[in-house]
Image 1: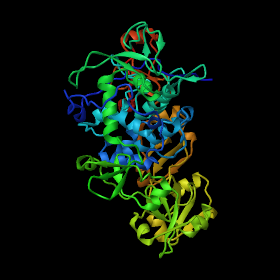
Image 2: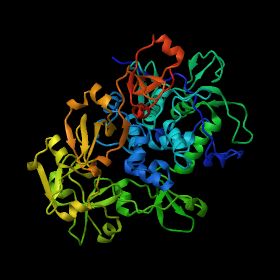
Image 3: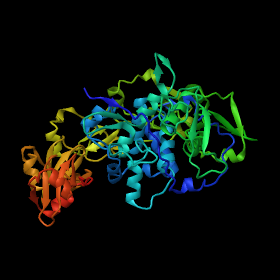
Length: 572
């Protein structure tokens, strides 16, 4: 049984290299900040703030975040783990046949461990400016993504290699001995829920006998109610003292100081971003002074709403906060608040039935209505004007895994996470699908559905195109180039070889050359450097380490192959 570990002391580094934080240089701290109560406990654990990954995606787009990018090239940068690793890390979606977006990963991590995704978004900004920051190069962006939550990055040391990568920062990782290490989401919630002897106490940072976080030796873990002394970082705000004593007022505050043992700049900046974006909890009703239109706060935006929606969603219209024009304008106005997800409705004039999903109304056809086992008695009849005021999306899709085709187009699709993904003939056969199980829908219905990339083949197959002899190996949702040596050593020739179109092949993310087996010693035919493969990376020997290894004989490979294998640290 593998051990599950977590970091006992993690001092988180605060990056101050990007424009949003520079703008705060030498600012006067906001007097409303209470260092002992950074965020309410109920807010910290509110996993439903955005409703779905689509809500997080909308927020990222609203902020112009680099994380809103959903192109295949960007998704590779998030370094989502292989299927077996995801299973071991209790990822709730280990078997998806595609890479997830940053919004989806944030949503899944928060939902799995019970953490408000708003907290994750704020930490992404606090640590690496990934919400509102800009990046001048691909390498600086990749560095920020790899250290996105500051997890495993002590203040005075480099980041732990096993935690590098957006995915591993969120979900955790395994070390070389197979021990599991928790990621940021699980670690924060473990501190939030920590108990001693069956009583919940919360878990703050480690302290010495004088309750200082920076003293040595450490003797215990701080709890809620303790007064602890923290060592501040002095750049950024005026009037900040080197040391500061804080009483941990709730479980969320204890967890945040465990994560970042500073008031300034770390937890003050957390509070600043959180209170700016999410000052009023979702569901708060505001009205501009001198106006009559009510708005409800929804993830940093204000939205008008109807009486039906207010009743259905439990919006408390009796408790209205009157705000100034300036504060009113600080919240972007979003489209009208819609009924709850899954609500069935129709207008009192038009016979079309809709289902609410991802903030819009989706028309739903009779075959899909029946397949999803919906009931006509659950359809709400509303004034036609209200139904018409809601934005219309694509037709509601059949359930995931359904094969569909339109009346006049022979293309077969599979529904996957709400997207229709075309299936080539080769993949259809390789996945052993049956034409007898295809649902036929109208041309208008199928064409309205959002499209995804080609359905990928089963894992561990070889791929090529009709006009190119290059062989690719499909593994873990990416295509990997296969050299002649790796073809033989890895036994790629024993796997099925599928011929697919160039368009289909290019839609699969390129994961680079697949490396030789770990332990293989290699050398290029035009260089004296000798490498050993470890964890899929080529690590170069020094003269001393090669001698200690007793001069293992390398396999000579074409220099281009060796140069193409991903590199790791030098073996000293």
